Image 1: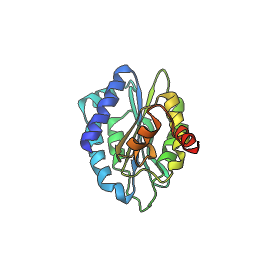
Image 2: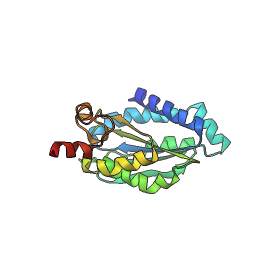
Image 3: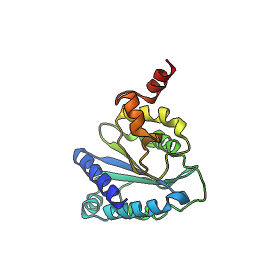
Image 4: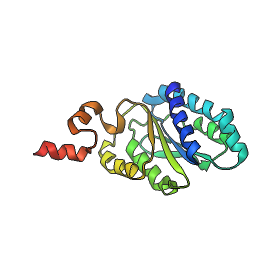
Length: 193
């Protein structure tokens, strides 16, 4: 997972070349995800300790701002942010505590992030969401509500962990059936005919 985080942070770096970025880290804090989370946060902490990120903090230009939150059945911001202090961000990863909850409300968490930080996404700042989870999510019914919000604003969302993007347990099979540009709703309509 550290390798995946390095790839994600490289993409964030590319976005930073274009302008200021707000990164929201959504971390699945359930017991089933603890091993993945531990490895992923090690990679994220290493990035915030990099000279490149430290330099942005010293410049005080707020080019890179971050928010860190843990989720299970609920969403808890451990760094309400947006904050540009690399040490605060790095330390906040350690504040996401494992929970005994058995549900991952992934799409609910993404929707709450969009409600809170979506208005900050625009010409002068890009919002990027990074999700670390090992499960599809127990609220998959929200995928058709959340996906258009992200697509409309072209908000990058990176998922580290599960090979089931956006609540699809067989994503390649479904995409082949629908075609690359059709939504899940279009696929349902086709099945009804």
